[in-house]
Amino acid sequence: MKRSNEPIFWSLFGAGGMLAALIGPALVFITGIAVPLGFIFAADTMSYSHMLAFSHHWLGKIVVLAVIALFMWHAAHRIHILLHDFGVHAVTTVRVLCYGGAFVGTVIAAYTLLTLKP
Amino acid sequence: MADTEKIIEIQVLRYRPEQDKEPVLQSYKVPFTDDMSVLQGLQYIKDYLDGTVSFRWSCRMAICGSCGMMIDGKPKLSCKTFLREYYPQGLKVEALAHLPIERDLVVGVEDFVTKLESIKPYIIPKEKRTLEQGEYLQTPQQRDMYEQFSSCINCMLCYAACPQYGLNPSFTGPGVLALMHRYNADSRDGGQAERLNSLGHADEGFWGCTAVGYCSEVCPKGVDPANAINQNKMNSAINYFTRFVTPGEADK
Ligand code: SF4
Ligand code: FES
Image (cartoon, rainbow over all chains, first blue to last red; front, side, top):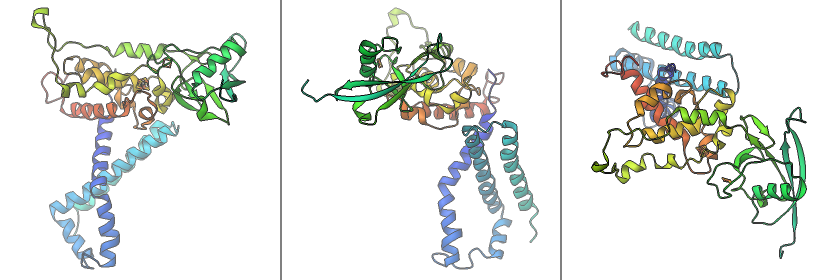
């Protein structure tokens, strides 16, 4: 029988899921609660200049890209199989919309990070 | 009987190919005691009320796997399910979902059996040993790797539970994939590559699963097909990316 290409999408899905489980809640807490309310972290931790500096460092670029891209691939795969389970059988359309969306998002994120102006 | 006799209503999905265009429900009033299984309720119907009702059974003790049916919409072994759980509201029994009805509660097993045969459900020895060399030894840890998966009784409840199988019967399905894992995970077995290359790596194999997990919930023997499938997805994915750098794997 023909070998499935699913491992590609499943691996991205798995990596995104793992990352989301490990840092998702912490990210929500830090960026959405702690920093805006000014506890634990200084209020300007996430100021534009700080974030820009972070994104200029190669390690920062990798972190931002990993969080944005892998989270999107995870969501794309989840939505895709969920629609399948619910009996939506426009397989090609669903695939193109889900994975295409994640792909475009990844490209935009990577392009933006690489061409970041000071 | 010391018990005051209770009566329960059992609705049975009937399908007699020679007279019914499509399956129809028929209702029976069955006297029962607290120790009676749903299977015993059906046997009462067959013995005293209507001899034409057809269903499969054999062991009456959750070991032969032949008495599976939908009981109030859930796949269950009728010999392992008690009538008292459905009293006083009554219950509905139907043929296992996703499988072709042959007659009343009897479903066709051909697809399952063909699939089961296709995975070579037996140990393919890793190394040939002569009688003089003695038995194949295995540590308790090695046995633990596959033991729960060897408890499958081929009852097909997981097939009635699996939405993927319902949508696309070419998917191998939970029970058979769990059994494939049972042999692949056996330290004495050397047939793993063969089984995976012919089926496991395909969409019809492990990759057809979308991780719903209902199969593991309904299994009456504590087998966890969803877990077997997930472990194999991991291995299959590693193999997918490393096959070009692993000698002898690239052509597969
Ligand atoms: S895995 Fe469980 S539910 Fe599925 S066929 Fe085997 S015993 Fe039945
Ligand atoms: S009669 Fe054998 S499992 Fe129920």
